[in-house]
Image (cartoon, rainbow, N blue to C red; front, side, top):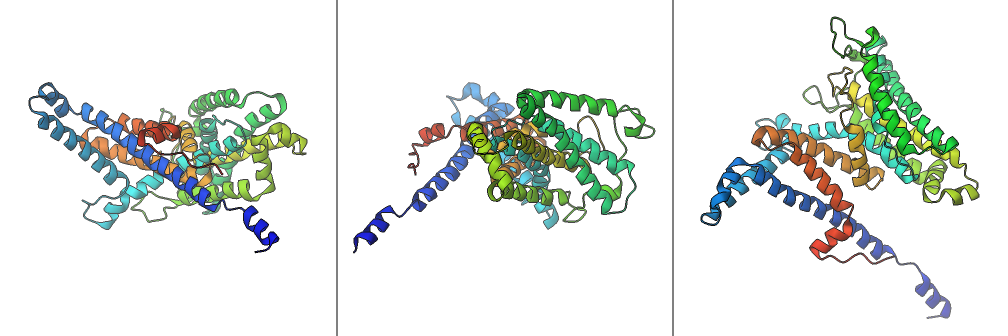
Length: 398
C-alpha cells in the first residue's frame, strides 16, 4: 500500500456507525421514557381505584386481593386507552374498529400545526409562547370568512384557509417586529398578546356580526358547508383535509430549515446572532420572518379548529382549548424537528383520544393522561436520568 493510499484510508471519515448508534440511543430513550411514564402512572391508576384502596388495609394478611385488584384496574385502564386511541378489537365492524386511530389523527392535527409554530422559533433561538393567541386570531378570521361570506367551493375554503394563516402571521409578526426593532422579549410580548386575543374573542362574540341569530350566548353562526374541510375517509370519520395540510406544513418547515437559504439564516441566527450579523445576515429580518412563518402555522391550527368541526363549526370562547400551550410540549417532545413534532403530535392526540375512552370505560380520572404526558416530557428532557435508571451508557461522541 502506498503512502497516499494509507493517508487516505486513515483520514477518511467513518462516522456512520457512531451516527447510527446515536440515532438508536435517541429512539431507545424515547421508548424507555414512555415505558417509565406508563409504569409510574400505573401506580396512580391503582391507588385511584376504590377496590384497591379498600384492599390495602389487609394487604399483609391477604396480599393477592390488593395485587389482583390493582392488576385488573391498571390492565383495564390501559386496554381502554389502547382501544380508544389505536384500534378497537371488540368492535363489530371495520369502521368502528379503526375509528379510534382516525380520532387520534384528527385530534393530533391542530397539535401538530401549533407544535410547528413553537418548534420553528426554537430553532432560531426564540420562544414563541403565543401560539394560543395566534391560533385564536386564525380561528376568528377563518371562522368569520366561513360563516359570513358566500363563495363557491373550493374558493370559499381556500380563502378561509389563507385568511387564518394571514391572521396568525400578523399576530405573531407583532412580537417578531418588536423583538427585532426594540429588543422586547418575545416571551413577555407573546404572553400579553395571548390575553389580548382571548379578550378580543370574548368581545367579538358579543357583537351582532359574530352572534348566532336568536341566541344571546357567545356562539357564532356555523360555518357554511362550502367553507368546511372535506372529510378524507367519508362521513363516518371526522378525519379531514386538515391532517393532510398538517403533514404538508411539516414538510414545508423541514424544507425551509434544511434546504433553503432563508432557513439557513434562521438557524444561523439561532446558533449565534452576533456571528450571523458579522456574516452579513440581516438578524432583524430573520427574527421577524421566523415569527411570521410560525404565526402562519398557528393560524392554520386555528383554521382547523373552526373549519374542521372541532367546535361544531362555530366560534366560541373555548375554540382554542389548551392547544397553544400543549404545543410547547409537542415541540419539546419532537426536539423541535418537523418529523419529531408530527410524531409527538400523534402521540399526544392518541393520549387525548384514548384518555376519554379510558375515563368513560373504567372511571379513571382524565388527569392520569395529563400525568402520563408530563412524565414523558420529564424523562425525555432528562436522558441522563433514564440512562441511570436502566444502566445505559451514553453514546460515544463523534
